[in-house]
Image 1 (cartoon, rainbow, N blue to C red):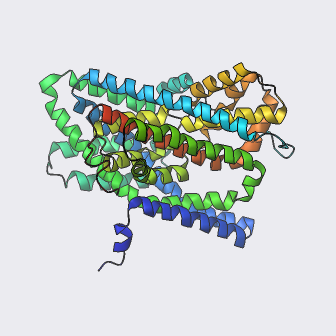
Image 2 (image 1 turned 90 degrees about the vertical axis):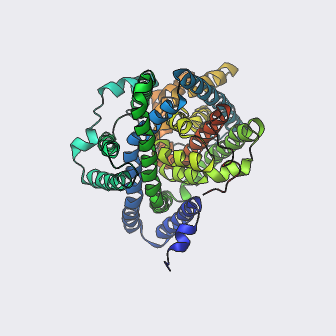
Image 3 (image 1 turned 180 degrees about the vertical axis):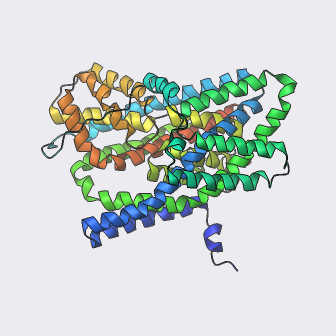
Length: 470
């Protein structure tokens, strides 16, 4: 009997959670037992496992979005239905962002994390990059989609080959071993090669391509059949890659725990409590209310069904890197159709940044309290509106929120010098706060996809709340 059977018999989310807990214990133990230089060197070596996992998942993002989104559009059968899904999705994201703003400003007002904070030891730090939503859209047309491939990075090329081998295995294991499987391999190769392309552009291309095929009528049936097969195959490849998640989470969280540790929280304990509590409240009030009160589904089952994606989000601090995991969880654990998951979730990973919007509100009040800026009632409204608007421009990568502080704090006239001090103070431990913000964003993506699927009749309710969670 295989000695590893117990491992694979364990639900994936439990394995991911185990990896996270063991990673924290290992990281803290290394920091306690070893000297700083040796400990950091060891943790960097362990972190390589996590980095490889994240890079592998990122390579899959482009082909995954393209295949599933095109297949999803074709499954709808009508461009008008796609418009209905888009409007409902945007409406829900706007509503949840409103709650995030209210909760964030409430946490900043109640806890007053900036009172008594001394920034004397903070090293001023400025950030280049980021940009608004429009600036990011402009960058799309000027960005080289084959950037990573042209760099000929050995790790990138090695992981690409492994993914292509997995795709080759499933393609030619499929019942159709003809041209469709070969075409799948060609497109999968192209998608992995274009892994540096912006997700927004992939979403736009996929939707336009799908709509074009829909208007082709009966002539498009072979294309529809191909994308149904391709979406199934790329999800199978993703499922295989997700078996590496517990080890990747272990490596990433061990590094964070070992290099940041618990000590770092002492200087910003109140700010950390405000952010974490705000995120928990938002998940239970906004998303929990949507699931329990609006959809009438069991709340505990929802959070159990998404915990695996939450763990990956917590360790990677990237909603984009977590996207394949989120898609797999909502389709397998909740019964969300591929058409809804393939359209709602990629959009959510780009524009649904509730955790970021909440965080920016808290940091804005933190800054005002540290430097003594007097805020009028209208300032709170401006902070909430600005946080909601600039959060849409946040990339789904670690610490992206810090790039947005300059336009955010300009709402009540914070000087550049004060902004640099705040960024310098927050920077060392922002990763620990960003991890929780990402969990919030991913949870929101899952909740909205379930709601849209329910309203569109694209939810298999024999799976949620009926079937057991994998």
